[in-house]
Every structure is written in C-alpha cells, then in structure tokens.
Length: 311
Image (cartoon, rainbow, N blue to C red):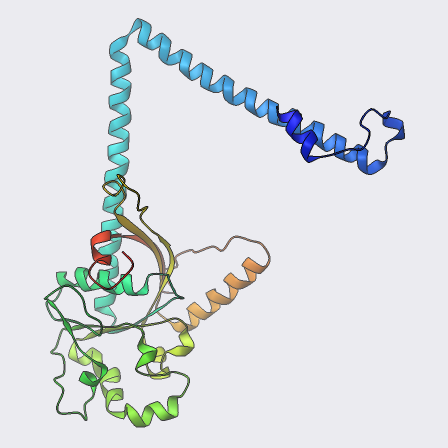
C-alpha cells in the first residue's frame, strides 16, 4: 500500500526504462522513494514488534499470575495519582508566588497581544488576591459582589467628588490605553495631572495596581517606567469544549513571564525575535538574580464566566 501511494505521489516517466537511461533527477527520485519505503517499513516493523512483545508479556503474566496483573494496574494508578497530585501542588505554589509578587510590587503592568489572556489573568487575580485583602476594585464588571467597580477618576487627587480606594486595595485596570494614551503624553499630563501623584505614591498607601495593554508603548510612560512588575502571558492552553468532556477539562493553563524591569523584558523580546527569525526555539529561562521568572498557573473555567467573555 505504501509503495502504491508513493508511486502516485512521485511519478516517474516510463518506469520500465533501464536505469542507465534514466536522468540523474529521476534516479534521485527513485532512490529517495525506495529509501523512504525501506525506513518506513523498518519503523513499522519495530513498532509492531514492540507492541507484540508487550502484549505477549501481559498475556503470559495473566496466564500464570492473574493477581500480578491487578497489582500492575494498581501501581500504574498510584503513579498517575502521584503525578497528578504533584502537578496540582506545583500549580498552587506558582499561584502563591504570583499573589505574593503582586502584593510586593505596588505597580505592575500586564502586556500581551489580543487573545493571550490579559483579562482572564486579571479576573484570576481578582479572586486569588482575596487571600490578602478584601478591598478589590476593577474597571470592568465582574459577577462577584466583593469586587467593586471604579474608574480612573477615582485615582485623581484633584477630584474631590470621587472617593479614593482605601489602603491595602488591589486595583485592576483592563485596557488602560483607553484612559491614558501613551502615544500622546503631553496632552495626557494636562488631563490626568491629578493622577500622577497617586501613581508615584501608590506604594505608600499600600495599594497594588495592575494595568494591561497590548504593547508597552501604549502604556503611559509614568506607569511604564515606575512599574516594578512586568507580567507577560506567553502561552494559553484553553479547555476543550466538547459534549461529554467538560468534566475532565475545565481549566486554562497559562505560562507567564515576570520581569522586575521593563529593560529586561525589551532585551528578551528582541532576542526572541532574532531566534525566531533564525528558525531556533525561543528559550524562557528564569534568572532570580535579574528578577526574571517563568512558570505556569492553572485557571478554572469558572473564572472566565465571571466577566463578558466567549466562555
């Protein structure tokens, strides 16, 4: 069957012609075809032999020692349970690490293109940061009575009509460029002059603020340069929505990168582009000395249902 298929794919004119009359290109095609068929048959034979030996081993064990088969199945279940438990503990430890990092850095920025999970990450933080405080605010509506809604005007020291969030608050601003455009800083300084003191002095109030944007240039320079935490959603594994399978796969798995300096992020971004252009794999390696971490977190599907999303 394989030979028949390859003969259809690799067509050689007059295959009955003797080899000495074939052109060099035709000889190379025939050689490549025969070599591929040979290697593929060897691979299939090795695979079939391996499965046959495994099947024979289980059959012999079952024939002479039925109880050993059940012990092997029990051992496999124990190994899977230990692996599953360790993986979930690992994800939970990463979640605590992220929460502690946000709490220790009063001004953080989440940068990522469309669809990388910025809003999902903010919603996840709105739930996990409850471990440290009950004062959580966001500029978008969440189906959670404990998360209050506020606007950017609530951070203006010159506007006495808007209440300022109390101390030890977590403030989440999604799509911050809609409020303060980083491409026109001079105009923004006139409009938002009363908010600059809050951005500079947020750490003295014990507040933690997170701003999101699709590009670092879209964030106001005052926020971008003062931010001590740069969070980058690198990849997002979404749950498979199929009938009958939702019970087994109800989580998002997000890989994030954390930087304590915007310069380190820009350097890594440039190197990643260069490696991608060269056809090489982009490496994400943590460096505690430079304040760079890469890890994964697991986000329940229920968190995505707390705001207006496709889920």
